[in-house]
Amino acid sequence: MASVASTLRSAQLTAPHEEEKSRPSLQAEAAARGLQVDVQDAVVRFGELAVLRELSLSIPSGQFLAVVGRSGCGKSTLLRLLAGLEAASAGTVSFGAAGGSPGLRTDVRVMFQDARLLPWKSVLDNVRIGVPGGDRAQALDALELVGLADRAKEWPAVLSGGQRQRVSLARALAGDPRLLLLDEPLGALDALTRIEMQQLIERLWRERRFTAVLVTHDVGEAVALADRVVLVENGSIAQDVAVALARPREKDTGFAHYESTILNRVLARRPPAEDRNGFSI
Amino acid sequence: MKHSASGKWKKRLQSAGLEWAIPILVIALWQWFGSLGWISARILPTPASVLEAGAKLVKDGSLFVYIGDSTRRALVGFAIGGGIGFVLAILNGLLPLSEKLTDSSIQMIRTIPHLSLIPLIIAWFGIGEQGKIFLVALGVAFPIYLNTLHGIRSVDRGLIEMGRTYGLRGFALFRTIVFPGALPSILVGLRFALGIMWITLIVSETISSDSGIGYMAMNAREFFQMDVVVLSIIIYALLGKLSDWVAKLMERRWLQWHPHFGPPN
Image (cartoon, rainbow over all chains, first blue to last red; front, top):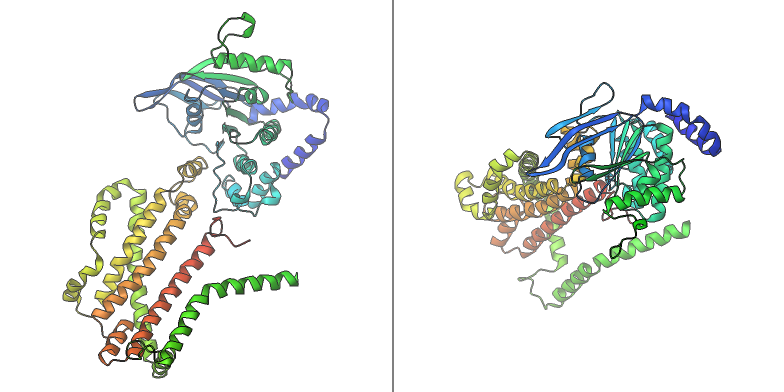
């Protein structure tokens, strides 16, 4: 753990072009670290209502996948299915090349929209929940990763919203997961804190090479973070876009292109180039 | 540093002074009017004579015996009733089957004013210890039951779900999330129960007893020792205040994380 923290510090010091050179080796490592996920024709029902309808999705090891869609489209249910919090009434979910079993797994961690810290435990003890065996030093290392080691003894109640989400991220990463599920974790944060959190999540993902699935309603956030963006509509996947932009991403024309393409599709809106009259948002 | 420390003490003294200002004023006026003869000693003896009576009872040792008897009854009844209420609430909060089976029966019994059972209790147990302990236990069980159950139900589902994704289940889940989440409500129930404990005991001791503070008061009334009657009322007030203080202390100690109970900044 300590070595991870130190490589992190050295990674911050290295110049961007050097980082680019070291990427291939990191990617080779990713194949071993990140969990591969396969969803085959999954159906999830709440009573009569089918929220996911024969949804199929294959996530390669180490990929950063973003799931976007309108509210109620089933994107959160997809995430809960991957987390093992919902069960598929038809279809299968399997993990890893060997096809590991679904359900609650110790190598899968979830970061929720609200931080879900236990108010009666100190920040450090909250992070210890994520450490198998509850080792203090390991929890402290995880807090170090998100830059909150100095707040270890405080109650969560005194932290700001962004700090709470960072603690929740530390808790999720403390057990070194192979798949991290993010359920709109930045939705409730202010714009600046959000950008910082995006950078932190991207950095830690690059450092530790877990597979990441981010559910968000913010297309810009999806394009900023993900290798690939899928759009969920009426419980199945309507669009699958690979984002071929270099990291770290700038909001340049390439970025804007991806963002507007996906957004137009989400809103079922024709691109402005076709110059239709009468309808625009 | 020194200055701020002395300032803090000053503040603390000031707040204690405000809390006690009215009781002290009332006692002073009471003593004054009594010694002027405006209040007849046959109706209400002065604080000084109450203290005198107290000193006499302390000297012959009977006061401590009475307080000890009452306290023992209160605590035994509280432990039995509180324990039953707590265990039932936890079962019903966690197991839907148990709730279906017992909750409506418990609610039915709860609507009976427990003090109305006194004639029945005397018929069953006479004026011995069991009757009073039974009544205290019955009175205490419901506030503990209701508040513990409410506490368990109002634990944030999101936190329980979070615990499950981190592999917590069974007793570990209960100990880490459900119980601490229910604790603020459980302690509210505890405070209610402590109040009911003393009230129940006072009433049942006054009606049927051969020892305890209630007995002391009734006995003194027969001999028209008004000072002892007032003394026993004051002792009840002090015991009630003491148990409330203990409950507050528990809240401060166990709910430090709660912004409402945290140490003053």
